[in-house]
Length: 356
Image (cartoon, rainbow, N blue to C red):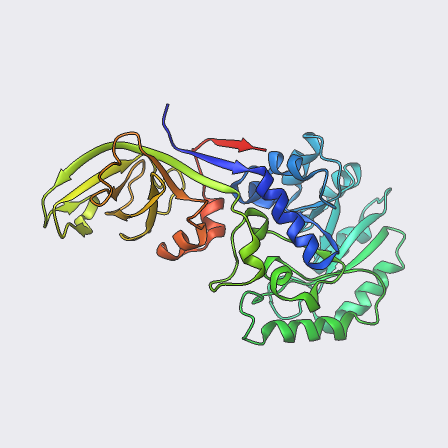
């Protein structure tokens, strides 16, 4: 059996969720959209079910999978609905919804609502992606609050640059949010993972931790709270072939790497079809037998190559860790000019094994 697999540590997942709660003492929706960032939405939801105040997903398809798996906690649809026909399912399965554009307001006004909805009303406080404009928000809030179709309202926005604490953008968004919503009753939700970790003044009543649940820092610098995160995913494989080449020899497709010395090469059963980033450069760190070495040559569909020259006791069958404990996914992502979010979400083909 091919040795490539992802080991998911559910204990670490719970630790990271509890850290989010401890940093504020407030309620938190565990964001498990995109198959829990590649970690497996159903196992992750089940692992958090005794702890979590609820879950957040992107769309109704993701929510229904959780309901079918027996998840009964609140589930928030972060993009709301895409078609008015979904409102029947939203009521049937008791889903919470984000409303962020006028089309959804029109759908709501025309729908046959038998069970009032729990709504999170989104303000565009400066990200300029989705949400209502500051000048129209209070009026929409008032109309929804007076509607018999609404059971509850949460004031919501989303930070664009909370992972850049020195740039001033988050202060501006927070000021906008407070000016627009400060006189409106009800709970608030502002913080994604970097907001949870670095912006205690913005915690509000509901947190929305995402990438931090999976143990990856959203920052490109050391951050005190992020240091307490535990990696949830460990991407593993092993050495499946070993050979030696002389100096000044090309390795892999396109001869992108030329050996500078006689080199002992290990071939790893892992490639871009598994989700390992094709654009990871030579020099990307890899652990073999828990010792650091580097990727050399271009990543192939099913294999990649590592330098074993300075690891004389490693060879055929040696375990390989591509990211996880002692090798943060964010560090690997830097070498591939991407982010840990994408590494996790791109995981494909490799089986996931779960450790409680």
